[in-house]
Length: 284
Image (tube, rainbow, N blue to C red; front, side, top):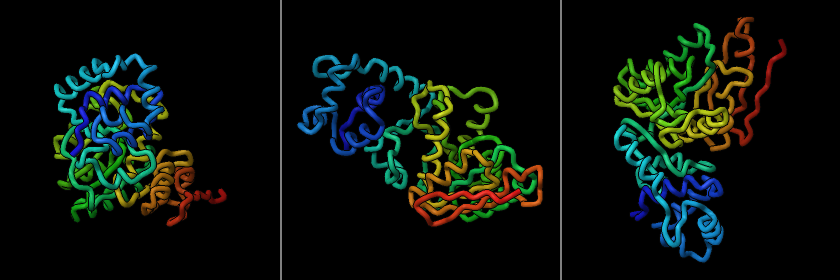
């Protein structure tokens, strides 16, 4: 059983010099902050702490972490460090897993699960296909993981909820920031018994690079990923690449090849079972 204090873990996560990967390594290798700090191997950690405003003498300044914990408690946001036994096992095996997960709702077992992602500009065909696949998955007890973006992602979440299934949304913002329709979508997933996950602290505003980082979590939580009508530069192609790099199964449902309006979303093939994600565009 780990002895880490959540205040200490969150405080360490604020150290810009301490990478997520390094923090994960420390949390998994040592059972408490004191042992990590005293270890002769952690010269880099001690140097970072001594240079940081968060470090005073022999203890961490946990003031910001305390504010985060209070905010999480007030808004029913759970905090799950990588050293916690409830941390998703599949996610823990990927390259650079999040050192900390923040989530709202119920985080259930993902032994039977699949990621379903795709274009924000889906065709009617793509919508119908996504709905049919997700219905079959949900009725078979397979959890649906996606990114809550408009288009295929949202269709996947909504269809799963309608079928009484379990769905997880992985988002690129802090869980205390959603407003308007985004908050409504978050609430719908949570109210259905699902879960919304973020690697970012509660008040973090989404930035462009955060969405790409989010995609590795979507694929990392499941054993397989289904791509539906991905665009040329769509984020779902990155999800496919992450999945293959993580040695997960990848399946693709392209758009209709003769639909000129949707040609940019349809003329792709994905080479499966390869360490590299190979995308080829058909001549148009």
